[in-house]
Image 1 (cartoon, rainbow, N blue to C red):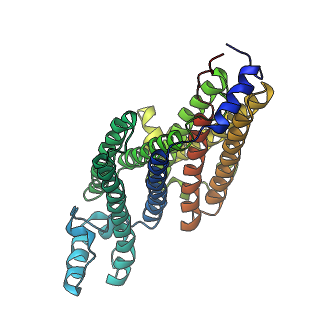
Image 2 (image 1 turned 120 degrees about the vertical axis):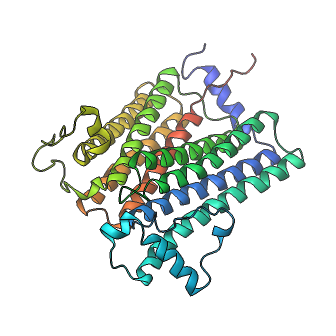
Length: 363
């Protein structure tokens, strides 16, 4: 194999510069990119729904009829009466007025409506592309897998919401992590497919070491995002609102309050917040590591640019997280922090795309 910066590298770069996707592939790529953008917006709406404690305001699973909001006063009263039977109302929101109920209802309704729209924007063009035979054979299985994951995500959403109807005043933090994690997996999957369609011959491969580093960073980011879901599920961002210490200690005294010890990682707000802080800092260190690898080992210009985006996104996300913590997670900043997580994931998927293995041209 030719070394970095060799004639092969220069030749590959020239070959890639003139390669263009076909018109049909561009259409497919922009469609999938548009669906991914809708999922991005969905995740931010979901964060607002969570931060405003709106997720339990709709207690019925009605995929068709639920697309319409209440159209009469009697329907509003009926839905409000259902809400008043659950622990969240009895123990947290007792005395809430109908007007206050409507304020939280609308966020949950918008969240569910947006999910329905994503399904339509995905399924209808997919059927059209299949009917017109405009799909490359390699992508068809991927598109059906993505569709199946989307359907599963709808089930996960209801599975999560239903956990808050009895025995607790909120949804299960574990189910919330599953719901969020699947949404981000679908988002990353569609991004990767759209990048492959729109940029079929990316910049010169970054090398095996850099690829390994990027995949390792993606694994670390997955853990960080999951820990962030636990923070959201337990409202753990509303305690220990100081930085860098937690109540004067770098490692809080109450980290291991629960038994068995592993229960602390998912149910102890102190441990959950500490773990998220630690993982966020490790993620930034990982981003710095891949950025240095792309420069010190003289990688391609494409690899350098992609890793620069990763480190910028990681640093920005850490700063947003610190600000949200210090300000006790106002809704707008919590939503912005969620958006920052998706921007970081996007930059990492892009970096993996831009440094993927390519075949050398024939001599």
